[in-house]
Picture 1 (tube, rainbow, N blue to C red):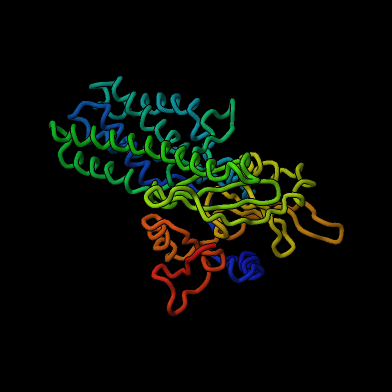
Picture 2 (picture 1 turned 180 degrees about the horizontal axis):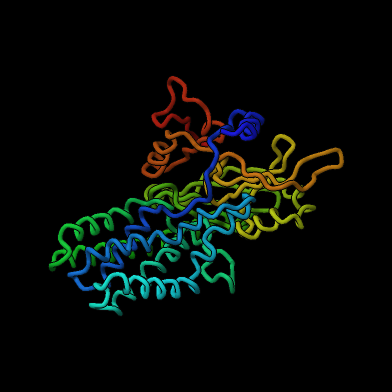
Length: 384
């Protein structure tokens, strides 16, 4: 680790020390490979399915290669990811170009050229369409409209979505032809599509329950955000944003009637307003659609993306200003180390999903060292 990074980590409060992020998060590449391989195999003649698996796998992960482009500014790297490489206005032309080139190198594509063109096209465009269902933000209409689309109805890695596609790809690799293979492929694609629809419906259900619960309170009109917790679509994290603060709660579709309990946190919004012309601040406000928190750490002003992670373990945090004798001064943006929750949090999430109730660890408990006699999940639970 470079000496400068070591100094930055040593200057952080101990409970925030964690390993440095390597770059922007992206949809699980394995899932994109499986989806690209599956849709490509579904387009071509049965005798060429095994060949289509290879081409589809490569095309399915191709848009993710924009992470190889190195930016000097971490906010630029964060917000330009999933832009040109994920544009639905550009990818069809890339599909046509790649199909034209590969067809000249591989005569097998001339057997059913139009079906192979469709395979190339779908393997590419399904990548950003799937990415747009996660919360990160995908610039589907770049450059005409770079507004990031991030529905947040599916987690970045979800086994219930990926495993059927894995089964289909493995089956077709061994036996690409036959009615059984066709049924397996169609069933996997139908299941994965239905699961994505379920995620969106579940998200709307969670939001409706949260709005009903908050209807008679002071934050009845405040914006709400609902995203699934890791690896499932049953337990949802709900975030409430209002001037000067935010709140979060969890809602289990198996055990709860609404999100709760709510934990409230302050956000130093007034400190960031004088810096609204500072490019990193402008860019982060735009990219997060306003879902950010502001706090002071070590004489630096930090913006945290509230959409990914949970209090206090957010994935993306950027120092954008520093304090001197005259107040807060703009500084070149610096990405802070990612705050990784302990693995025992997964046990708590499982308990919360199945049992519901008022079990919610505090931020300090999330990062604390487990003690003798702790709850089975390694976290003390109880009413807030």
